[in-house]
Image (cartoon, rainbow, N blue to C red):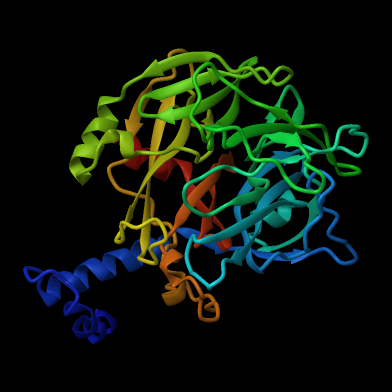
Amino acid sequence: MAFWNLICLAIAQNAAASETCQSLVQRAAHTHKIRSLDNDLRLNLHEAAGLQDSVVIGGISFEAVPGFLRGLTNPSFAIIGEDVFGVFRWLSIKEYEPILVGPCADWYSKIAFSSMPLSKFRAKDPDWYYELTPDPRFQVEDKERNAECEVQKDHPPVGWGTEDPRLFSFSGEMYMSFVSTIKAPLNGSIRSKCPKETGYRVWTSKITVQPLSLAPAVQLYTDTMYSDEKAWILFPAEDKLLAVYSVYPHKLLDVNLSSGYAPQLAETHSPLLEDLAESIGISPEDFHGGAGVALVNTTQREPYFLSAVHYHTQTGEEYCSTETSFYWSYLYAFRAQYPFDIIAVAKTHLPLQIDNLSNKLGEEPHDTDKYPHWKNIAYITSMFIDNNDLIIGYGQADRDARIYRKNIQVVESALFD
């Protein structure tokens, strides 16, 4: 405890008045113990040698790095045979003039694709070599001159390209979902505005690995949609492909990959999520999904699906505020059969890395971050079971890709007991 005694004076001035130095030491030591026992790895993403940026948006190409490269983040993984495939959100930011920081900028996203042998993945190799893929909304053989439309918003930012790619397997094939705007005819060389109340949509594309190619993208839709649709989590359940559409209510869709139509299959309201929301002082509608879905059938329990909810807080209210945002994620389990209702919710949030600039894991810190107010963002984008471990892929600070590992029996004891 000697080390924690040394830092007590440094942190006590920021603590609640009712908290003693001794309690601060105990809390800090407990947090350190959690981080030491868990396995959290920051990935190193390298562009494969000799590759060119071939990304073209509907006949309108843009600079290889519009603005400046923020990083490769929001990873998603899939195990196929003896290999692990990964996709990442390649993100660059082009600030407005006069220069404004934070979300007041244009965001450019591309798909970065990579793979490594399963043995290296299990050995916790942090180095991934990626290539950028073309936008699957647009194909070389397309006859019409279309481009992605520009979302009509009353405030920035404007998002371009393919956001948050996620891998999933279905019927022995590998697919990817991603978020983008719809396509619209070019007006000369100028992008058209998106129709009113039609912003971002979820798309899917089938992936062929050798050589790497993406089939024409299919836009998904359901009966009632918002202006922006994001974070549909697609996963197989027996012979169906389902999507978690929302967590409260816990709404699932039945997805047809050919037509894109996804009617509602089930909807339940979880008292467990209501209890968690009450305990942390939020509304259950404030919980969001998007974390991926893992089938757990390796334990003595009946098979079930595992996912996570998150909520976020921001210390500033203005849209372009540079105040710090915080993300907190909680595991939950839901039934592997209809009505796919929630059967367990964790009472404590996952100890994901949210303080990269004052890193506790012994990593080399980044240079001074231009956007330090994003350092407490930890957004889960992938979950699966491998070798009796729960694997969580998540994006940190809209800049890094990370992997968190935890033994599934340890996870279950905290979730169900």
